Length: 299
Image (cartoon, rainbow, N blue to C red; front, side):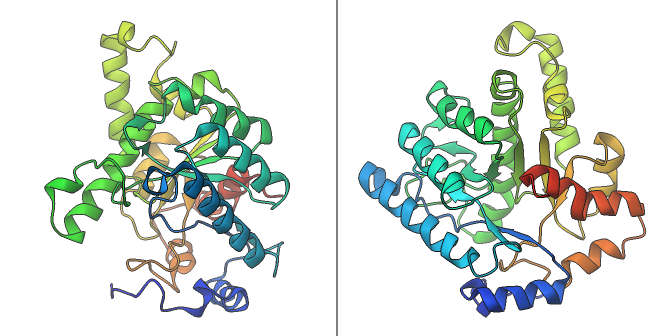
């Protein structure tokens, strides 16, 4: 497919144009994600990180107010300070109407199962909004996961997104986050789906052989993931989608438009899924509508 400029569509900055592009694709409701450039830690300056995330969330909320029934957003949080992140999550949901939060797969030197982040997961669970993981690791001031080994966008992008999500899945399952917060919903996005069955099987095997090394859980990692609270975002033309649906069930995969990234399939993302012959009509409905509604609690 042709590469596109991520800012080439007016809908990236203009809500009216965004609605026009949604109509063009056949999207009723969109949940938007802020760009990732290290706002969570902002050069390790706590005050700057807090102010920057608040400003980003205010701007996104203003964008959504143009058509609140159709335009939704998740919050960017100053996760360098978990207490401040918790307060901003509460404000973003209760005052700005946001429907979730986004985080990288790790925050600087800490994995997401570090106890300091439990206050954030507890608040997300209390508010009834999902934690959405965005894979990667190439943001400014992030502790890299292999970025230092590669020199091209091809290598960095291809490697860090799925590997980053593997780190996150392990933190939420083996690390015990889903055990400690039994009502928390989590989505693992921007990395495709084909790696997930392999990774859950591998985690299960290691847990069965050495359960004493995972003292924060009492069942297979896959059982936590498949408890109805975890979701994974798919590319519309990804060949592994039917296998994941067959292996893990219809209630795990969610549609993502990837609008308007350099590698997106705009304006055909919905059409590609709708016209697939390797998915049942029920599976397509789950991916395009039912599962996203459950993830974001959209009526």
